[in-house]
Image (cartoon, rainbow, N blue to C red; front, side, top):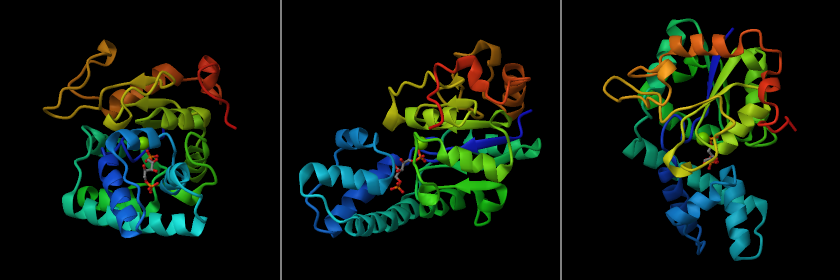
Length: 265
Ligand code: XBP
Ligand code: MG
Protein backbone atom coordinates (compact mmCIF):
# COMPACT_ATOMS: atom_id res chain seq x y z
CA UNK A 1 0.00 0.00 0.00
CA UNK A 2 1.45 3.39 -0.97
CA UNK A 3 2.16 5.43 2.16
CA UNK A 4 4.58 8.19 1.10
CA UNK A 5 5.89 10.22 -1.83
CA UNK A 6 9.65 10.95 -1.72
CA UNK A 7 10.80 13.84 -3.93
CA UNK A 8 14.23 14.63 -5.27
CA UNK A 9 14.83 18.42 -5.33
CA UNK A 10 17.11 19.85 -8.03
CA UNK A 11 15.59 19.22 -11.42
CA UNK A 12 12.51 17.49 -10.00
CA UNK A 13 10.85 20.19 -7.87
CA UNK A 14 12.27 23.00 -10.04
CA UNK A 15 14.85 23.58 -12.76
CA UNK A 16 17.45 24.96 -10.35
CA UNK A 17 20.72 23.96 -12.03
CA UNK A 18 20.95 27.16 -14.04
CA UNK A 19 21.10 29.17 -10.79
CA UNK A 20 23.53 26.63 -9.28
CA UNK A 21 25.87 27.09 -12.25
CA UNK A 22 25.82 30.88 -11.90
CA UNK A 23 26.47 30.58 -8.16
CA UNK A 24 29.46 28.30 -8.75
CA UNK A 25 30.97 30.75 -11.28
CA UNK A 26 30.44 33.77 -8.99
CA UNK A 27 32.07 31.85 -6.13
CA UNK A 28 35.09 31.03 -8.33
CA UNK A 29 35.36 34.74 -9.16
CA UNK A 30 35.21 35.75 -5.47
CA UNK A 31 37.90 33.20 -4.61
CA UNK A 32 40.17 34.19 -7.49
CA UNK A 33 39.77 30.79 -9.15
CA UNK A 34 40.39 31.06 -12.89
CA UNK A 35 37.67 28.58 -13.84
CA UNK A 36 34.24 29.34 -15.26
CA UNK A 37 31.71 26.64 -16.14
CA UNK A 38 29.90 27.12 -19.47
CA UNK A 39 26.48 25.48 -19.80
CA UNK A 40 28.10 22.67 -21.81
CA UNK A 41 30.81 22.17 -19.18
CA UNK A 42 28.26 22.23 -16.38
CA UNK A 43 26.13 19.57 -18.07
CA UNK A 44 29.26 17.40 -18.14
CA UNK A 45 30.05 18.15 -14.52
CA UNK A 46 26.49 17.33 -13.41
CA UNK A 47 27.58 13.71 -13.70
CA UNK A 48 29.55 14.40 -10.52
CA UNK A 49 27.08 14.53 -7.62
CA UNK A 50 27.51 17.07 -4.87
CA UNK A 51 28.80 20.63 -5.24
CA UNK A 52 32.05 20.13 -3.33
CA UNK A 53 32.82 16.96 -5.29
CA UNK A 54 32.04 18.78 -8.52
CA UNK A 55 34.39 21.67 -7.64
CA UNK A 56 37.16 19.24 -6.66
CA UNK A 57 36.76 17.30 -9.91
CA UNK A 58 36.81 20.42 -12.11
CA UNK A 59 39.72 22.18 -10.37
CA UNK A 60 41.62 18.89 -10.36
CA UNK A 61 41.32 18.89 -14.15
CA UNK A 62 42.90 22.33 -14.41
CA UNK A 63 45.50 22.55 -11.64
CA UNK A 64 47.12 20.90 -8.67
CA UNK A 65 44.46 19.41 -6.31
CA UNK A 66 43.49 21.95 -3.63
CA UNK A 67 43.05 21.07 0.06
CA UNK A 68 39.48 19.95 0.88
CA UNK A 69 39.19 22.87 3.34
CA UNK A 70 39.64 25.32 0.48
CA UNK A 71 37.13 23.44 -1.70
CA UNK A 72 34.68 23.58 1.21
CA UNK A 73 35.26 27.35 1.57
CA UNK A 74 34.54 27.94 -2.13
CA UNK A 75 31.43 25.77 -1.85
CA UNK A 76 30.22 27.66 1.24
CA UNK A 77 30.52 30.91 -0.75
CA UNK A 78 28.63 29.28 -3.62
CA UNK A 79 25.83 28.21 -1.27
CA UNK A 80 25.48 31.77 0.10
CA UNK A 81 25.37 33.16 -3.45
CA UNK A 82 22.84 30.52 -4.52
CA UNK A 83 20.60 31.54 -1.60
CA UNK A 84 20.84 35.22 -2.65
CA UNK A 85 20.11 34.41 -6.31
CA UNK A 86 17.20 32.12 -5.50
CA UNK A 87 15.61 34.54 -3.04
CA UNK A 88 16.02 37.52 -5.38
CA UNK A 89 15.15 35.88 -8.70
CA UNK A 90 13.06 32.88 -7.67
CA UNK A 91 12.57 29.83 -9.85
CA UNK A 92 9.17 28.39 -10.86
CA UNK A 93 8.36 24.93 -9.60
CA UNK A 94 7.83 22.33 -12.31
CA UNK A 95 4.22 21.61 -13.36
CA UNK A 96 2.23 19.55 -10.89
CA UNK A 97 4.79 19.22 -8.07
CA UNK A 98 3.08 21.57 -5.62
CA UNK A 99 -0.33 20.20 -6.61
CA UNK A 100 0.81 16.56 -6.11
CA UNK A 101 2.29 17.40 -2.71
CA UNK A 102 -0.95 18.99 -1.47
CA UNK A 103 -3.17 16.32 -3.02
CA UNK A 104 -1.00 13.62 -1.43
CA UNK A 105 -1.34 15.12 2.05
CA UNK A 106 -5.10 15.55 1.55
CA UNK A 107 -5.52 11.81 0.88
CA UNK A 108 -3.30 10.85 3.81
CA UNK A 109 0.05 10.18 2.13
CA UNK A 110 3.20 11.40 3.84
CA UNK A 111 5.89 13.45 2.09
CA UNK A 112 9.69 13.32 2.18
CA UNK A 113 12.71 14.77 0.37
CA UNK A 114 15.79 12.77 -0.63
CA UNK A 115 18.33 15.06 -2.29
CA UNK A 116 22.05 15.53 -2.90
CA UNK A 117 21.67 19.29 -2.69
CA UNK A 118 22.93 21.02 0.47
CA UNK A 119 20.43 21.43 3.29
CA UNK A 120 20.88 25.24 3.08
CA UNK A 121 19.52 25.20 -0.50
CA UNK A 122 16.08 24.01 0.63
CA UNK A 123 14.67 27.06 2.48
CA UNK A 124 15.07 29.53 -0.44
CA UNK A 125 13.30 27.05 -2.75
CA UNK A 126 10.48 25.85 -0.47
CA UNK A 127 9.69 28.90 1.69
CA UNK A 128 8.41 31.14 -1.16
CA UNK A 129 5.98 28.38 -2.30
CA UNK A 130 5.00 26.53 0.88
CA UNK A 131 5.66 29.26 3.47
CA UNK A 132 8.15 29.55 6.35
CA UNK A 133 6.75 26.42 8.03
CA UNK A 134 7.23 24.28 4.91
CA UNK A 135 9.21 21.65 6.81
CA UNK A 136 6.13 20.72 8.84
CA UNK A 137 4.67 19.14 5.68
CA UNK A 138 7.57 16.69 5.31
CA UNK A 139 8.04 13.70 7.59
CA UNK A 140 11.64 13.27 6.44
CA UNK A 141 14.14 15.64 4.81
CA UNK A 142 17.43 13.96 3.79
CA UNK A 143 19.85 16.39 2.11
CA UNK A 144 23.49 16.74 1.04
CA UNK A 145 26.02 15.55 3.57
CA UNK A 146 23.43 13.88 5.84
CA UNK A 147 24.42 10.58 4.24
CA UNK A 148 27.82 9.05 3.55
CA UNK A 149 27.37 8.47 -0.17
CA UNK A 150 25.55 10.72 -2.64
CA UNK A 151 23.39 9.58 -5.56
CA UNK A 152 23.54 7.26 -7.48
CA UNK A 153 24.20 5.49 -4.17
CA UNK A 154 20.90 4.60 -2.44
CA UNK A 155 21.84 6.22 0.89
CA UNK A 156 19.50 9.24 0.76
CA UNK A 157 16.48 7.06 -0.06
CA UNK A 158 17.42 4.42 2.51
CA UNK A 159 17.70 7.15 5.15
CA UNK A 160 14.31 8.59 4.14
CA UNK A 161 12.68 5.14 4.33
CA UNK A 162 14.23 4.59 7.76
CA UNK A 163 12.93 7.93 9.07
CA UNK A 164 9.50 7.13 7.61
CA UNK A 165 9.67 3.56 8.97
CA UNK A 166 8.47 2.25 5.61
CA UNK A 167 9.41 -0.65 3.35
CA UNK A 168 10.62 0.37 -0.15
CA UNK A 169 7.43 -0.63 -1.94
CA UNK A 170 5.34 1.50 0.46
CA UNK A 171 6.91 4.64 -1.03
CA UNK A 172 7.22 6.19 -4.47
CA UNK A 173 10.25 8.22 -5.59
CA UNK A 174 10.17 11.21 -7.97
CA UNK A 175 13.37 11.91 -9.88
CA UNK A 176 14.73 13.85 -12.87
CA UNK A 177 18.07 12.19 -13.64
CA UNK A 178 19.59 8.80 -14.29
CA UNK A 179 21.66 8.97 -11.11
CA UNK A 180 18.55 9.81 -9.11
CA UNK A 181 16.53 6.98 -10.65
CA UNK A 182 19.45 4.61 -10.00
CA UNK A 183 19.63 5.73 -6.37
CA UNK A 184 15.91 5.19 -5.75
CA UNK A 185 15.95 1.94 -7.70
CA UNK A 186 18.94 0.59 -5.79
CA UNK A 187 17.07 1.40 -2.55
CA UNK A 188 14.19 -0.74 -3.82
CA UNK A 189 11.68 2.05 -4.44
CA UNK A 190 9.34 2.34 -7.41
CA UNK A 191 10.31 5.49 -9.33
CA UNK A 192 8.43 8.07 -11.40
CA UNK A 193 10.82 10.08 -13.58
CA UNK A 194 10.26 13.46 -15.23
CA UNK A 195 13.50 14.32 -17.08
CA UNK A 196 14.84 17.82 -16.38
CA UNK A 197 16.28 20.19 -18.99
CA UNK A 198 19.84 20.01 -17.70
CA UNK A 199 19.86 16.22 -17.80
CA UNK A 200 17.68 15.70 -20.86
CA UNK A 201 18.80 12.59 -22.70
CA UNK A 202 19.59 10.68 -19.50
CA UNK A 203 18.58 7.02 -19.76
CA UNK A 204 15.63 6.81 -17.36
CA UNK A 205 14.57 3.34 -18.48
CA UNK A 206 14.98 1.95 -14.96
CA UNK A 207 12.06 4.12 -13.82
CA UNK A 208 8.62 2.53 -13.50
CA UNK A 209 6.92 5.50 -15.14
CA UNK A 210 8.53 8.22 -17.26
CA UNK A 211 6.49 11.37 -17.93
CA UNK A 212 7.35 14.72 -19.48
CA UNK A 213 6.11 16.35 -16.25
CA UNK A 214 3.14 15.86 -13.89
CA UNK A 215 0.81 18.38 -15.55
CA UNK A 216 -1.26 21.12 -14.00
CA UNK A 217 -4.50 22.93 -14.70
CA UNK A 218 -3.83 24.42 -18.10
CA UNK A 219 -0.51 22.58 -18.52
CA UNK A 220 -1.39 19.47 -20.52
CA UNK A 221 0.31 16.34 -19.28
CA UNK A 222 2.29 14.07 -21.58
CA UNK A 223 -0.29 11.69 -23.05
CA UNK A 224 2.25 8.89 -23.63
CA UNK A 225 0.39 6.86 -21.03
CA UNK A 226 -3.19 6.42 -22.36
CA UNK A 227 -4.05 4.23 -19.39
CA UNK A 228 -3.52 7.26 -17.21
CA UNK A 229 -4.53 9.83 -19.82
CA UNK A 230 -5.63 12.92 -17.96
CA UNK A 231 -4.97 16.63 -18.08
CA UNK A 232 -2.63 15.92 -15.23
CA UNK A 233 -1.37 13.10 -13.06
CA UNK A 234 -3.20 13.12 -9.72
CA UNK A 235 -2.14 11.67 -6.39
CA UNK A 236 -5.19 9.39 -6.43
CA UNK A 237 -4.16 8.08 -9.89
CA UNK A 238 -0.67 7.44 -8.57
CA UNK A 239 -2.09 5.45 -5.65
CA UNK A 240 -4.26 3.36 -8.01
CA UNK A 241 -1.35 2.84 -10.44
CA UNK A 242 0.98 1.89 -7.58
CA UNK A 243 -1.63 -0.57 -6.21
CA UNK A 244 -2.07 -2.22 -9.62
CA UNK A 245 1.64 -2.38 -10.23
CA UNK A 246 3.07 -3.30 -6.85
CA UNK A 247 0.27 -4.83 -4.77
CA UNK A 248 1.58 -8.01 -3.26
CA UNK A 249 5.07 -7.28 -4.52
CA UNK A 250 7.75 -8.88 -2.43
CA UNK A 251 9.83 -6.71 -0.18
CA UNK A 252 12.04 -6.37 -3.19
CA UNK A 253 9.88 -5.14 -6.05
CA UNK A 254 13.11 -5.18 -8.04
CA UNK A 255 12.39 -8.92 -8.51
CA UNK A 256 10.23 -7.91 -11.45
CA UNK A 257 13.13 -5.99 -12.91
CA UNK A 258 16.19 -6.91 -10.96
CA UNK A 259 18.24 -6.80 -14.14
CA UNK A 260 17.47 -3.11 -14.62
CA UNK A 261 18.37 -1.93 -11.17
CA UNK A 262 21.90 -1.84 -9.80
CA UNK A 263 22.01 -3.77 -6.49
CA UNK A 264 22.02 -1.57 -3.39
CA UNK A 265 25.79 -1.44 -2.77
C1 XBP B 1 21.44 17.92 -7.38
C2 XBP B 1 22.90 17.93 -7.14
C3 XBP B 1 23.47 19.03 -6.30
C4 XBP B 1 23.26 20.38 -6.99
C5 XBP B 1 24.15 21.46 -6.41
O1 XBP B 1 20.87 17.26 -6.29
O2 XBP B 1 23.61 17.05 -7.62
O3 XBP B 1 24.86 18.79 -6.18
O4 XBP B 1 23.63 20.25 -8.36
O5 XBP B 1 23.90 21.57 -5.02
P1 XBP B 1 19.42 16.49 -6.43
P2 XBP B 1 25.13 21.56 -3.99
O6 XBP B 1 19.06 16.35 -7.89
O7 XBP B 1 19.64 15.16 -5.73
O8 XBP B 1 18.46 17.39 -5.70
O9 XBP B 1 26.15 22.56 -4.50
O10 XBP B 1 24.54 21.97 -2.67
O11 XBP B 1 25.64 20.14 -4.01
MG1 MG C 1 17.69 15.91 -9.28
